[in-house]
Length: 103
Ligand code: FES
Image (cartoon, rainbow, N blue to C red; front, side, top):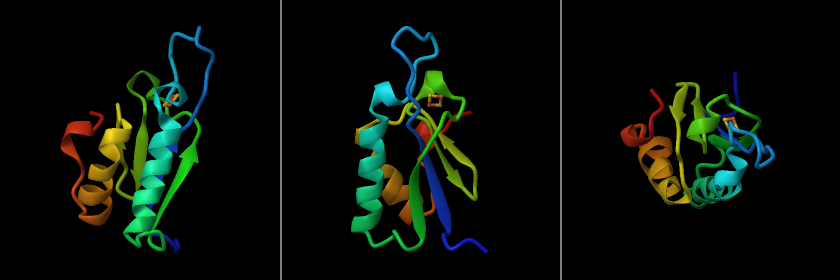
């Protein structure tokens, strides 16, 4: 049994600027990771929810890419401005942020 109720994986993969696939790192992934971690901690959710870096999640063109388990909710094109809403609505409230879902 997992110690955490949810795991949030944020792609921090980095590629060279010449790579056609692009990468989440170049789209602000490090800031997204820091903001999600900070908001989870501020809300006291860090004992139940783990936010961590991940390698490529294979949605490079739609980065910053994030996946939340165990429900396997995939988010794409996440920006720093979206982080508070993800924590508020999804991680704390249990309802995914529909407009950011990868389909
Ligand atoms: S580089 Fe982030 S999903 Fe591939």
